[in-house]
Image (cartoon, rainbow, N blue to C red; front, side):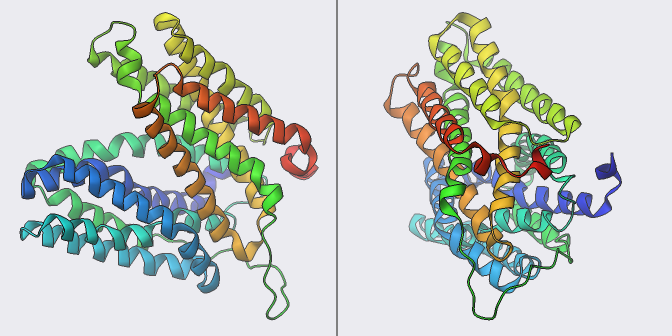
Length: 380
């Protein structure tokens, strides 16, 4: 497996995981900080919402900026700005600043951070070959599961040294990520002076819809874990069993996809989402809940990978950071909508929203399979 011997990929991987780590630390880190400095854990939740909102607003503009200045150079500067913003936030919070000031200070690092994932994803195209790309994205998805779990654990450990320490650690991690940004990327193709390449929006929509579906269905499972378990008459602590099942299935699905090393048909993974979401919605006891969650987890990594690979094929090289930033924003909006649905709708109905989104994605891919799935050089 040539990917395992690609040192450039592993440098990129360490850098992108360090870039993601502050986002997984932020919910608990902000809560710990505000609880200690203002006495309100609710303020931490609001601060996180402000931070995520700023990320979504800033994703496309910062991605566009990265395309203009170059992803490698732009990422270093933006990561330094994120680190600076987090350092200032920790210092001002420790000084006892008012609530509104803390909320305002969460906006600048969020705005800048919005395009970081898109920038790193753009650099991956110059780090691995086209044949290695499906496997590279799948391996990355497997490692991401560890970052998602490790972020809160790291905050819990660091919080014993002081309430501001986790936020300071987030800033430090951003600095480390800046040091590991790949310095070389694939040279862009020829372009006439003054010409602006257009993004083929219609061709990208099926893949954006697939990413939206991932965010929507996963959020109804993850955010709704407690009511789903309570519906079975189980104690709250039983949610850990479902989390383990989801993570294990997700890692397994990505590992199998990486071992195959080919794009595959996304409609198969969307069908798994449809079946898994329906089973979870029906409330068929523990077997139904764990089976449905496992099926969703198995299909999550492959669906994200195939969407990412095909988006790269469709996006112009000089607008990839903008396009991938838009993709991450679309997925985040799906997660946000699913979270909102848990608070507004009956728990059994929420997974069906993800099922509906998956069906819409399938219809889009059935209507335009050749354009959507890609060229024979990738899917053969």
